Length: 278
DNA sequence: AGTTGTCAAGCTAGT
DNA sequence: ACTAGCTTGACAACT
Image 1: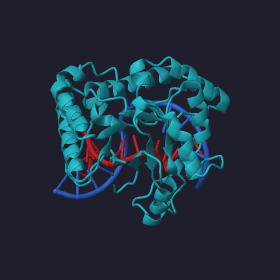
Image 2: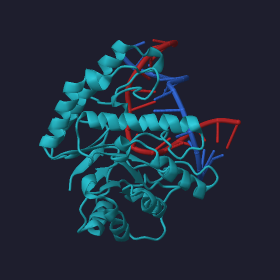
Image 3: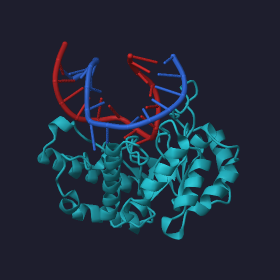
Image 4: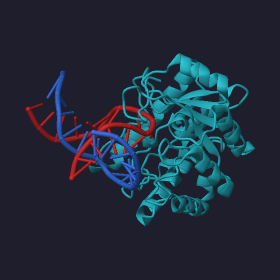
């Protein structure tokens, strides 16, 4: 099992997700920012190696405005050497990376513009991981999307639009159960129809489920991952007490974590710790 | 130098 | 009607 954390390393003064306002976009600014982000990503991966951390989620901001019309730079070519070098580092040390496009990426939206932009956002993520020549175990995780007043229709729209995605995206895309709308069971149904792997989010499963125990949730999701997908990815986090439902905790609770590990015993997976203080 | 309003994008539930 | 929350605050204009 590899353990990972998302996007930000609080021990290094180097961030791989710095961006800028759209209003101040220029090719120079873009070039500078991407160069710095890639440099910091390398630093973070080195740090991770030294600290036994084999898994990392790369921020979607690593290439700012990559899917926006304003960006016409062929960054995959410009930064080819840097990207390949990072990819080599990841593979040589048996590490894994993933990405999580943000809440605006909705492939089940009834709005065609939202769908189009979501597809180009997903293509950007796939292109980024492809540019590092990483295997298809480097995943892009998204939620199912909105309900739009009709859950069944929302699910069929997801399946239909998923089938039209380019192979580069399909090779990496996985779906994650969320905390309010689409449960693990919904994701498994979509898996039945599409073959898409299901990423189990432990915290979301506590918020929304159909009575499956944690062990059952593991048994159900594990077979949705094929050989080329790598071992399953599992997201772990906890409710911040006193905050509104869905808010992630600042720090881990070791009792809860021990219970989780006991329930997970015997299953093979990589673990993403979505805990604010890493 | 420090503070604070705002930032590409969507949706939902709670207030 | 408004806003917090979402995988992650931080940019940039203002005082």
